[in-house]
Amino acid sequence: MSSDSSPSRPTLRSVTDRFGYPHFLAATLVLVAATILLGVAAKATGSGLACEANWPQCDAGPFNLFPANLPSFYEWIHRFVAMFAGFAIIGSAVAAWRLPDIDTRVASLVVLGMVLTPIQVYLGRETVLVYEMDILSLHFWTAILIFGLFVVATVLVWRSALGAETVTAAFGLGLLSVPLHIALSPTDLGVVSEYSPTVQLLQYGVTLALIAAVIVAIMVGRWRFDDRPLLAIAGVTAVLGLAVSYLGRQLVMNNISALDQLYIGLAVVLFFIFCAGGYYSHTRATRTDSAH
Image (tube, rainbow, N blue to C red; front, side):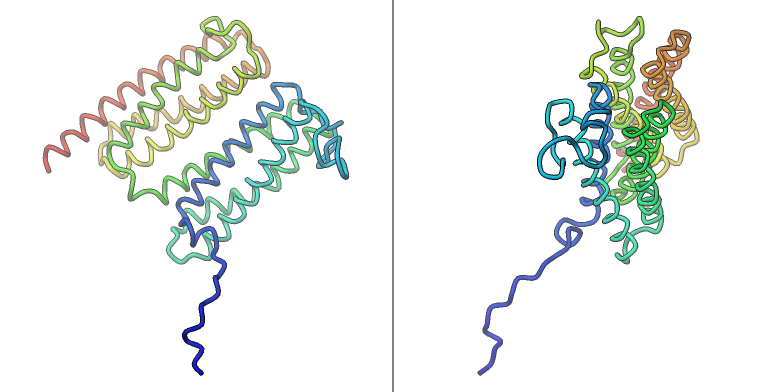
C-alpha cells in the first residue's frame, strides 16, 4: 500500500521562518530597549545591590534563583529580561549570517552587537560585585551602543517600507522628545519636584526615543532625499542628540549644576533643528508627491 495518503508530521520551524527576519530583529530591538529601561529602574530604586549582591543568583527560592523582596525583584527581572535579550541577539546574528538574502551590513551590525553582549554581561556582573561609578557608566553606554547598532540594523531591514514621510515622522518624534527630556530633567526648567525612579525611567525612555529618531531621520533621509541641506540638518541633529543625551546622563549621575545651562542651550538648539528638519522634509515629500 502506498503511504502517500498518511498525514504528514508537523515540522518545527525557526522563529525567522514563522515571522520573518525583519520582525524578529524588531522584537530583539524591543528586548534590548526593555533591558536598558529595567536596568535604569533597578538603579533608580537602589536595587542594583539587591539579591544580597549575588550574581547570577538572587536571594530566595531553590538555589537562590528567585527574588525575596521588591528591591530584589527589580534586579531579578532586569537580569531575566536581559537573558532573553541576549539569546535574541545571538539568534539574530546567527540568522543574519545563515540567511542568504540578509544585507551584509545588517549581519555585521548584529554580529558586533553579539560580540559586545558578553562584555555587557561581564560589566553587569561587576556592577553587582564591585559597584563603581565608572563601571556603571561603561555598562550603560555599552548598552546604548548595542541599542544603536540594532536600531540601524532594523532600519536597514525595513528599508523598503520606510518612505519619505518616515523622515518627517522621525523629526516629529525628536521634536516631542526634546521638551520632554528637559521637563523630566533635574534642572531649574524641569517640571518635576522630585527626581523619582518613575521620572528617571520616563526620561531614559525619552532618551532612547531621541536616539532612535535621530538615526531614522539620518538614514531614511539619505535614502529618500538627495538633498544636501536636509542631510546637513540630519547631521547636526546627530551631534546635538548625542550631546544632549550625554549631558542629561551627567546631570543625573553627577548632579553638576554647571552643566545645566550647556544642556538646556544645546537642547533648545536641537529643538529648533528638529523643527527645521520636519518642515523641510515635509515640504520636500509634498513636492515629490505632487510631481508624481
